Image (cartoon, rainbow, N blue to C red; front, side):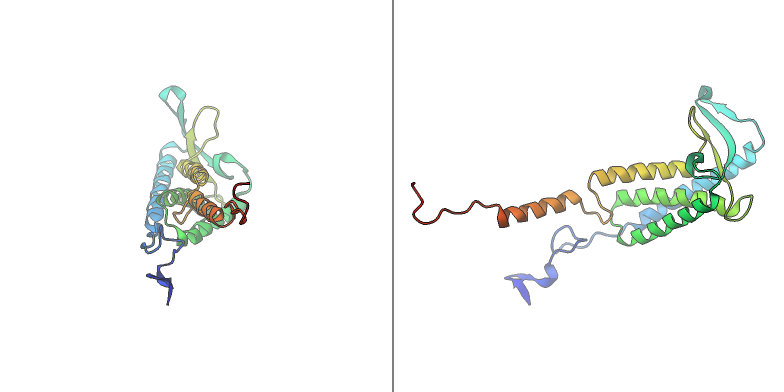
Length: 211
């Protein structure tokens, strides 16, 4: 069965295809997993080293005091926000992980894969601390160790979450969607269809020419 001469129903445009007849964009779950694992591994290794070298010791000042390495424990969210709500932030982190896993089913954009990978690795990094560290399972305090002037102490997981959040805002502002399409392209197509259908000037009635 054909819709027009030489064009079958199987050639119709698919949301995951750039043009009709093109192969679908490949999923980018591998990029997400690689970035997430890298962010998680760096965070875990850095925290192990910090606990071993800096716990119960004086802070290490570098770059003339611009950067200070100080081992602290945080019961709240990133940058010591909301201390005392460890269980709540544990539940939120689990929800973030589940949401990213669901989104990955339609992930066909490399920039979004990097963005979600950073968010996933950061969320898992702090979640591991909350699940495994003292004072109790699922109530553990997160290890923070990077201190800048006039800024709360943080860790690499916090940095990954922040970078992922900023990247998400930039991608959304540019109209790039998780499936690799662009909002502006879809709006342009709708606008062109509207011009063809309803914006043409009406043709003059017979006998009106020359008046």
